[in-house]
Length: 324
Ligand code: ADP
Ligand code: MG
Image (cartoon, rainbow, N blue to C red; front, top):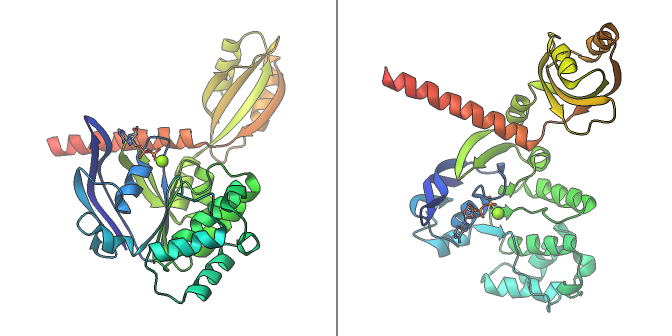
């Protein structure tokens, strides 16, 4: 349904996108995950026909977006990073305006009523957009994307700036839209794609560094358990050496935040080995005092670091093979 082939976007000598390719099948819901500046919006703006590419091609339902943007746009509902809402219009007026703009021919009243129902904005239909909360504004933006019933939905950072309750609502909405649409959404938040997407494409510095099922990517990231420990002892070095002597511990990194006589460390431990008991015994043996152990999550940064390390390793192995 969506095909991107060797897409490159260059600004001067800066590559916003550097030769990316991927495909998204009909009915899939895929997350484009990457930190700020990775190239997510650039990808989406090219896919939706709003930005030209330096090289490569993009197809929506077989239509080449770069050659035929008008035809491609008919197949797409787009929620840009900053939805172009008109604050002086009511929600209803705005949706009628979008209906006209898109040249929609579906029966107007029932079509717009159905959309208002799906995105749950019926109760604010007659309110001025200027007076809506950010959560409602976002839903109006999503409603506009749904006008003309496009099969493909492209959402750029759909939950940015929303409060936790609104985030949950928008995610639920995305999941339910996923039943009838092909969706690509961008985010810099890992839990977002974990919550909503079946597949994750990780983009970094304009390149794709992973394209895998969500469960595979998060499993790869969770090969290790991480803990934050706080220990009283003679010195940071003595404690760190003792920690590293435990077979369960792979890494012990000193953290800032030491008190008068305690030191904090981030421990990386082999998955499935509960380090807490050996840790406690170690402290008794060494005459340290263990004053805290808490699990640390795996954050996006860790996942990136590992993905980039893996990508670099694979690249190096590939090069060696080619040299032979
Ligand atoms: P993301 O959406 O992932 O945060 P973008 O696609 O907006 O990232 O940007 C990718 C890169 O391209 C960034 O390094 C950004 O600074 C650069 N970039 C984006 N738009 C322009 C532009 N109009 N001129 C120059 N550089 C740009
Ligand atoms: Mg962006």
